[in-house]
Length: 461
Image (cartoon, rainbow, N blue to C red):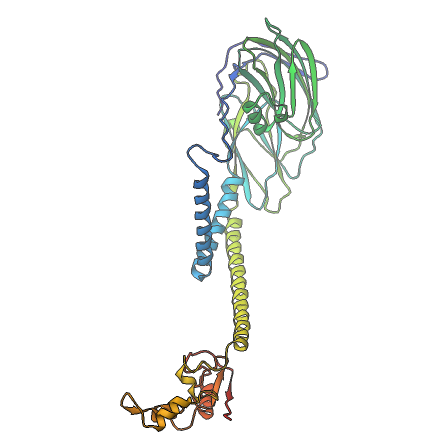
């Protein structure tokens, strides 16, 4: 919460026949110094002590984490845990992030329409903070009309030391208008800044760089006497601020006249004063009702210049419970279909690769590399080997001719010669009768255990 130290001062209040109110110098807070600017870093080092290589390492770690996450999603149990956790985090983000509690700083004659999503929010709760009183919460069956016009004027006399600023907050709805007349006094005829910023973000940008005109809705350098006017096109919080960037003290006299439109609160079905206790306005599940938070105009003798309230939302837990379950189920369903599609694609690719290999691989292995192919049409004994066999040459204590004859026999029945080969692997290890029975029984090659499609017979000429 901002510093709310007050300086006692006298004030005057007056009203005119048109209903416009006038307020002068009631409990003004002192000007505040501009915050120190955060140093900027180069593109290679966004934060002190962190190098570009360190960032690359972090990116690589993130990629490794993503790969690990994708591998976990392939497992059904891991996918269920991940989906449930993600759904729960989404629900908690909406419940306590999007519709979390916040502290509002209100200006005079505030009229805020509160219309949260009725599916996720069950009630609107308001608690008043600080010593200022007078805020109210109204409930309606439908959005009230924005047709009540309110006008008031304020006079501020501020002394700005060097490098200080002072701002005033107002919540203004669309079609409102701000008129400011100013008078600047200084020994060296210095100029100061007069800005109108939209929202807390706009004020923070201006405080970070007061000399940049693009940070605010209206940015003016003022000196002497003059006036500015600004029309409001969007309902939001607006700050009127002055800043002294000079080395000497500057006195500023501001006359503000604001014409605003507020919501009609003459026919509410719910009324509550937060100063008397917590206000809890319940919303219909089907929608159709709305809440309006208001603050009164400033009056003489006020303790504080602004009003502070805590706005929170009561979650509709039934919707979050069903939403979490539905989102988790949807994620599991998507993962199931993706895995099914991936498996189908892998099977199709495997079959295509199998067909290509069957076309490119040799039907029979080379006779020097694979002894099982000795029964093929080109696996005949060379002239030298035949000569050695006829000459009674002995290899390992056995005749060479007998060893060659045993290699030509079927590896299954050892009776008929090897006269066929399997497709697509091309292995030749059995006779045609045994190979046919193998294909019909197991459908796998006895050598490489690869799935076989058919058997081709070898004819020797």
